[in-house]
Image 1 (cartoon, rainbow, N blue to C red):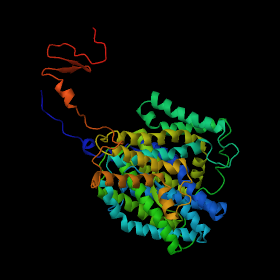
Image 2 (image 1 turned 135 degrees about the vertical axis):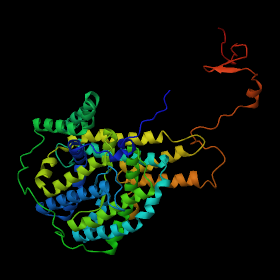
Image 3 (image 1 turned 30 degrees about the vertical axis):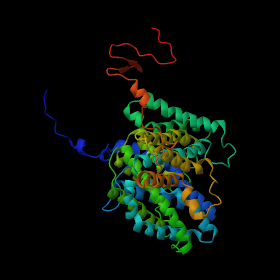
Image 4 (image 1 turned 45 degrees about the vertical axis):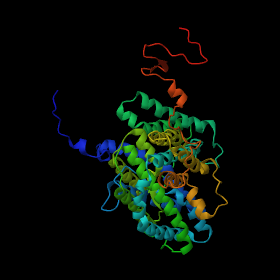
Length: 494
């Protein structure tokens, strides 16, 4: 046999995320990422603008500012500069974690300038403490990581359901058969394209399903592109358009809690996408990713945008398509910047019915949960307390998902942290892993009911009944002469 080994090619030694697929593929897959997260990135400015009572024109500028900054943040995270950017396929955008806090700042008289000041100042504090968070990788073994990834996927399922029902709970047709039927068309398209398509079609199944679903919506009269040409075609986000940030201590402290949540969630997302891509993420790389989040969040208020973080739903897209290239996501950043300076493009994308996104989202978010379950399957459950750690962590993560008002009467700072199922699951999993697997002092020497299995033991009586030469074959005991040893209470006639 020849022992000659071929010299590794450049592709062999490069990290999976460093593969460059070329202009056409990068644009197609990049657009697929943008369509997946578009609804989420525009939802935050829409909610804040409504709470602030903004005019439609200002609302449009707030949305384009968030799209623009999401693109800039994505480029920083994927391409990176020294000390900033994880260089992983992570799409960045406005974090939903801060919505409640920003609306609260508005209600207490802080105004939009108070929000921008709180975001900027708290992000500076986040940048300072990011190196501390970057040391948490050793506290995220597969046991913890699997819980968090599973909860990320499960906590996004209600988002997919909301989209599938129409995306607007106040609409008369919310939850109608026609809306859910559209979601079904998109879902069926994803499954069909994944089964019968070649590799390229399968990888683009989400994008193609969205196109098919949108065409079906047009035929059903549920998608209207007539307003696309109305309004400005080109608009560069104007710095400080909404005024100079106002720095209020109480607002900054409340937003700092949001920053802590974002740091925990981004840590989970960075580690999750590293696991999915199959590339190691050490504390240095995680720290670069967290600093990119915080730097983007510091700059964002200058253009009228808010806190930036990784989008969990796009982690699912990486898992379901198998496209691991960070350059694909960098093109997503370029597309987001284009949408930010070309409002007409944003209006085209906005015409995609939420129901269509919901059908595709069901596969995406379910894939994230499945990735977490796959990670948990690698965990050792024998003779330890890992099973109860998984049970408690996933339970804590899903509490706010199944009961959104569960923490309504808790202090605001506590509710802000645990209302995010992702951060709740991460904190519980990390603490319980430390408590049971690292600080073992005080652990009972008696086996718990939650231990998946105990060590096998044989009684002295059973051991005494065995003879030299006995052998077990297919679950039956035979003696040295090959004769079957009968089991008491069963028929042994053969």
